[in-house]
Length: 329
Ligand code: ADP
Ligand code: MG
Image (cartoon, rainbow, N blue to C red; front, side, top):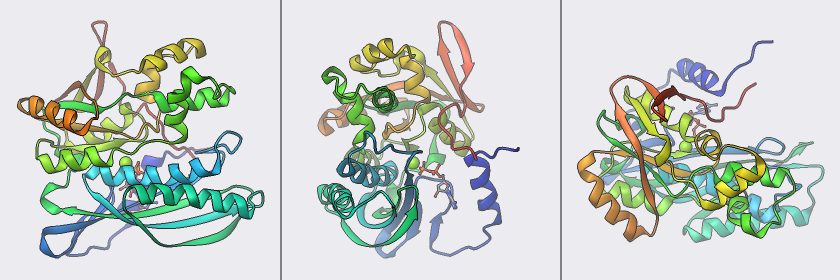
């Protein structure tokens, strides 16, 4: 049987899509679609679905946190453009196993995140989904058109930065799978998987600063998400293995699980941190912005002429382009 990768299916759909609109600034291909409004503003549109057994397992994912995560992963795409999230639509495909109490707890978690970002739930849909619970969320945000940070704006010579640490969510998932989520010393890792924190405020500050060229959120692992920036920008990237920020808890847990922390960081998904590129002369102001935001940022490499994502490790140069998470059918 032939297998289809997510990327190829999206590309095929985009090719068939012949419609245009004068006020459409960016359609398929970035973290959000961008639609021009009056007064120099744009609307940002994004949607993300979560499917039981694929994105979450109810054996360890409490309904409140599932609701939170469903909201957060969508907000992350708004933050990735530098925007301010405003409105959400929530489509619930409830399974036979979901009772009324479950739906209430799920909605409570979802609405909690919306309240934290001063957003409003303005609609949705509620249907019976048979065997598997499914959530599909659409979020609309807004920002100044001239500040939008696209995947396509990276230039050779830019430095590549990421927020916080990478690999925690993938490691947290593995801990949950092995029934180790109760271990206090690994709590931050499990939390990264169960209740990710979208970097909306940092994304807004970076976009407003004008210091950044390209930006996106890391949902499928740096190896894949930076490859999108490379592809859209017509450039390559080099990552220094030793520069990738790894949490102390990750290094300990990865040793216990006999997994490579670097591999979790580059190829594991769902960190929802930001990756962005900026000219080298902006490094000091970026460090100041990071201190002001209270969010760590780390330079992990640089954009170069060429294509693809190369990992520099122990004197070797290895191609890791698109080696993160991808849905296959
Ligand atoms: P992200 O991980 O940032 O949510 P995706 O990798 O899911 O982005 O999608 C990449 C781009 O393709 C986005 O612009 C998204 O809106 C678009 N896209 C994904 N699936 C479809 C689809 N079925 N139809 C049209 N556009 C799609
Ligand atoms: Mg994204």
